[in-house]
Length: 255
Image (cartoon, rainbow, N blue to C red; front, side, top):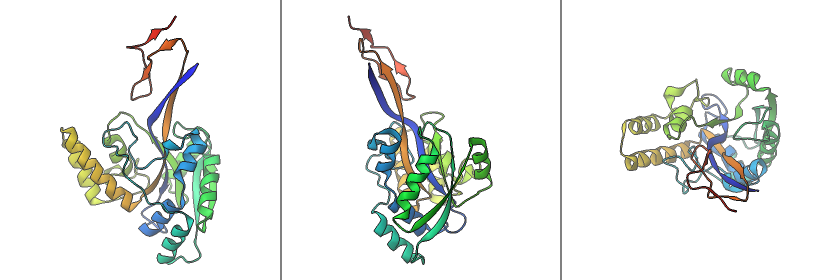
């Protein structure tokens, strides 16, 4: 028995409420991002650190670019950002999370929240975790409980608009833009891409939008999900489509 795997059209992230303290300050949002080790998280979730997310778009989605780079640098650099923002002794935040497994987080948020807490503690970012069953968690999100939250998104289709508009456009607030992030230039780029038929132009628009988003750091992109199927050794040339479903067009049985 062998396995076929690929990154899925899903994203796990740490969201921050951009519309109120402390995360209405971009330097503090960046400090969170700088303090976090996304590869460690991907390794814990999937045993595969290549699934560490570098932006909002998963690898198989139009507009994904492997060269996009979130803020990084480790705990000491995060402390310096906090000092520059007026917090020389660090900050205390409440992180809300869910308890059940999700496609972008098969181990559940309880363990993930503990990993996040451990990573942020090194930067004097002290985290109190509040975990809820799934439906109670959704209510807590809608009520903007806590300061930050662990969540994710599973693509409804393979179009980049389903990630960028859904998670980060002003028009998607408060339904799915749970961070309350607003940037007029990002909105303009997303809107232009919605009306554009030329894929090469759409790629450029989405690349520009992602660059701005990474600078603003409304959320920390943690990891992509993973599609995996098991295939008997005597079945050859099975592949996966972008939705993670097996394709048997070229498959055959080796006797």
